[in-house]
Length: 304
Image 1: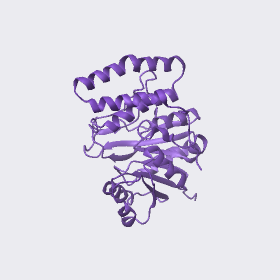
Image 2: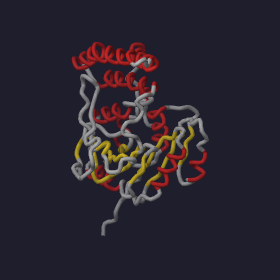
Image 3: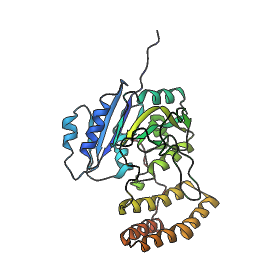
């Protein structure tokens, strides 16, 4: 009788001032049925005491960064410490079904051309409501894309796995083979768009991206989260442009820059002014100006 082989999975999650939520994730991971995995928690220089995470869960690997490296940089620390055949980048504000790993591993083991796969994602605080069942392609002219199934009640309409344009940053399973070929995430993004850029690099290296319908996680992000943050406005503006500059060429890039200059900049500037949100206006323009002065935007890091 042929023995079953379980490739090792390294589950990597970033903690930043969210020890209680991270511990809830770890309690969830204790119940998974897949037998061969490790969990790596990277603390991104939290201002709160995060030592309770390791104290309460001594079975994990705990990495304490001396500075906040952002989502990309923090995950890169975890990737360099990981020993698995597959790497799962998993948000700390998620919980998982006990059997969620097996379907993704089977998908990727059966087709080695798959470099990245994401599970179905359900809103934790809105039971049965879908956040992600794949992504439609990003528009090369506007830098915008839409999520398949977002906000819909899950009645089995997305029960078939399929290739998708990119994975979801809340839960990305990546093969070691893909990481060894393309390197690590581009840490110059810091926050937002880094996983989209990473998926584009992985696709250009000849791998495909998939949505695995047989796997489910629950994301505690609100359906209307974070619209009033200057930090979010800055990085979304900055990195939307950065993503376009790194992944779009020729006429499409020229059109994209014209679209942002002639439509997005005036529209957003007027909206912030009319609403009296001068702090948001400042953050928006800070993101725009960063792209004017930034150099070496195509730099990537290698797996060590």
